[in-house]
Image (tube, rainbow, N blue to C red; front, top):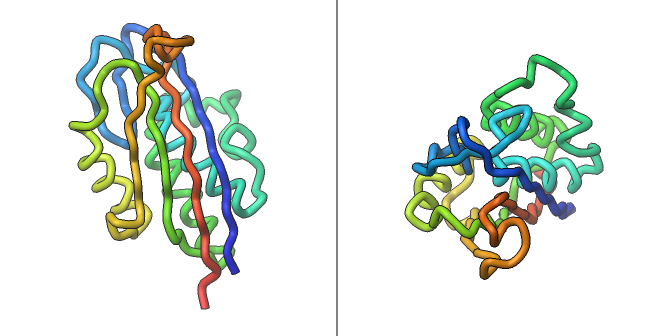
Length: 159
């Protein structure tokens, strides 16, 4: 049996924060504003995983009103959700994702992101796609006010 989920996240760019995407620190003068480390890629993947199993969403599972999640590393949240998937007797078949940012350029960081995420999710690298897109200078992302991400996750019931 297969289950599919879709996830989305967006965070505002701001000064005074590190830019962390896909569990990787990216060199940039701004970071993403959020209760956690605001890792848009991991948040989109988490929401896709939770959606595939109808387990609500990232905000329900890790509310921004709970101080224990303040500035938390999103890889910790991803590990927790991966454990939930295993408890439900599923495994990740594949993930397809996009990071949408006008700046900085994401391509140089994608191999390291894949290494980090595949390590956490026990995936071969050919089962994780991370693509970089821009908004052609349109909307908040295109005007470099925010970065967004979306992801689709296919889960497979373990035999």
